[in-house]
Image (cartoon, rainbow, N blue to C red; front, side, top):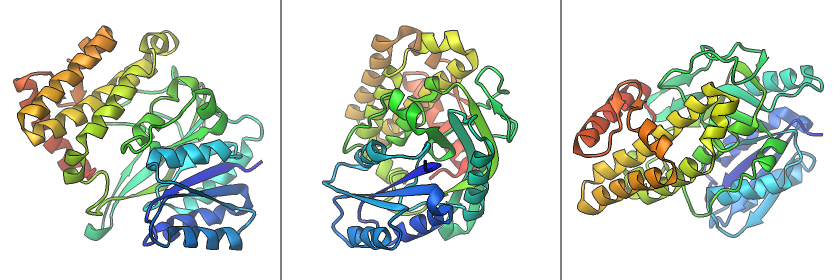
Length: 339
């Protein structure tokens, strides 16, 4: 069995997809690379087929109609044969040395494979020649398999985003992960929905995932996020309603607190970009989003009212909460440089 299935969803990715794929090929036949062409109109499919022809035992190509990033992940998960599963966006890449170390660590596990492997990720502002590494060594001991009840304190500003997570393929299937089509920001669902199904975790202090920041058309570009705020709201609603958090609380209070805070971040992000739009329609959408949370889970709603963003900002509904939310966002952006 392949150790890891890497899925690379591609849409008009001819300018940068080779960097992503080349970084994965160091895994040789221990990995499979599933390139999903999501209805591209450029040379993406031609490039993908070139890799498949050159590396037939490693590379698979899926050619499909355009359905968005989530559709590409769904298509990859459907045919993945690896023990673990990881999405690599076509404009990002993995550190080759870190990937080789990761594969050696998986091999050393023999049959004691954890449900989830967590590694560091790196914000790469290539145009500014700046990097910021996001680590988790304050939460986990590197190289030790643990569980959610044994972990240390997770800081208010820490989130385990999709780029840091490597789930067992079976866990994703058991969790019934299926992402909505034609919707951005679905990586948040990948990082959230399967968590209650993961009972054992292994953290490796490796700077594995290289997250490119800086393209003007990138989904995390601030102007783009403002224009796509409705899709952010859609994802927020899915995340806030896809899991029975009271059941999670019975299993692990630490995981419960983290997942509640994860929802708080999602609703904060949605609120921020609605506030930045600043029109009456956007204020009404923000009000409706809070009402959706309240109608779906009142316990969650009241907890969210008093949680903080980056340890500094209350995400209270209403005008005062909106003002403070925007202030906190600007502070967090300055510190973490996430877009």
